Each structure stands twice: as structure tokens, then as C-alpha cells.
Length: 274
Ligand code: HPA
Image (cartoon, rainbow, N blue to C red; front, side, top):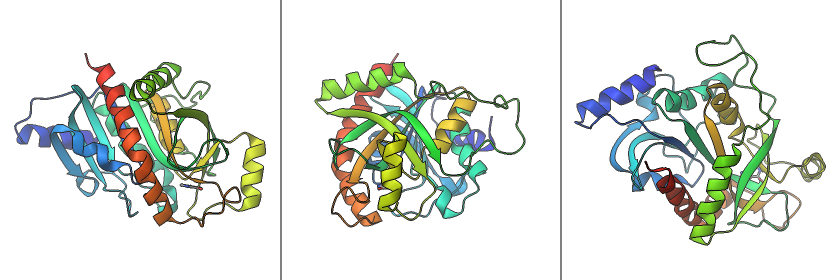
């Protein structure tokens, strides 16, 4: 049990809640936090109060953990995340994911805002991730390994769970939402990529590019969580479109995708209900 998970349980008890074990953790990225408001019987705790939690400073990230029920299923929602580019040590990015695990979840769904490297997947669309390429130059498992938490060497052969991905597609179909599939390439940021980097990343096999998620996937697999991930495409990657990229632009377009993403995730979670 992480210290943060203990605090969450204590806070929930102090607020008179029945103890609940979340089935799934949901990590909501830039501009995608609205789903947290749909959680009922919620206990919400700012990251700043949770021991070891890295606190992000990016606009569009609320920065709180919400434990409660969504569509009849117990969930823990992480509304916002800290990023490597904020100067957070990469190993600290492990704490929120390990807290999800310590609270009892078996699966985690990670969401992010990303640029598309594919002309057929345009801003406002969603992409289920099938795999990743880590170009962050960092790995959250570097340093001593705690064998109680997971193995020293972690396989990432099927890091993105095929069963959960199929469930995401079923939820998207039921909601009439198009859900592309692709490989996510993570950079450290905070600068966006150059056109030459994007040309190189296309050759490497990337379909989307962003500045998060990969450290969390690695920690989640180390912890034995099943992983699903969805990118909300906010722009065509640098050099592929004529938009001027900025964080404001990301947030505006994330809002377009957010409504669809919320419907897909709500149905996905409903289907997990016991
Ligand atoms: N590059 C990196 N991160 C991003 C992008 C992008 O084009 N869009 C949203 N997050």
C-alpha cells in the first residue's frame, strides 16, 4: 500500500464512505479531465495532499485524485498528470500509477492529447494505442528495483492489452465514435517537434506523438496492471498541416475530442460493471 493509497482510504472513511475497490484507474490528460465530474459518491483529493505525488503545473490539468463510481463501476480517476518536461524526476511519475494499483485496480486506461502523423486521422479524432516508441530518453524504472512492486526487467511485448483494446472498440462502435489505432511515440518536450523529426518518426512507424503516457505504461506493466490508452488527436504533427502549434491550440482541440472520449470511456467502464 503506498502512503498515498492509505491516505485516500482514510479520507474516504472519514467522509463516511463504504470502502470501495476500484476496478479500473482512468488517467485524464490535457483538456480531457471533464469525465471526473461524472463520478458519483466521489472522494476528491488534490495531488498536493497525496504523499509522493508529483504536482503538475500545466493549464488544463486539475491535479486531483477522484475515487467513486462511474456508470455503476468503482473507479479511481487521476484528473491531470505531471510531465517529465516540468522537471519532475521520471521515477516520481510512478507514484500515481502505483497508487491506482495499491487501491486495488486491475486495469488502467491512460488518455492524452497528441499530434497525428497520419493524414487520415485528423484533429478531434480518437486513436487507441497499440504500441509505443520511447524517445523520452528516460525510463521510470531506472534505479534500484523494489521486488515487492514488480520485476527488475519488464516485458513490453503486449503492453497494450488486446482484450481491453477490443472493449474500447466495442464501446466506440456502440457510441458511433470513430476510433483509429496506432503507435504512440513519446518525446520529453516541452518544445514541439521539428518537421525533420516528424519525418523521421514517420519512418520509425509512429502514428501519434506526445509528451506523456509512456512512463505510466511502463510502471503499470511493472505493477501487473492491464493497460489501455487512447490519444485525443489535437493537431496534425509539425510539418504535416498549416496550424501553428501551441498549448492553447491543444486545449481547444482536446475539447472537441473530449466529448466523444467521455462517452466511449463511460460505456467502456459500464461494461466492466460486475
Ligand atoms: N507533439 C507533441 N505533443 C503533443 C502534440 C504534438 O504535436 N499535440 C499535443 N501534444
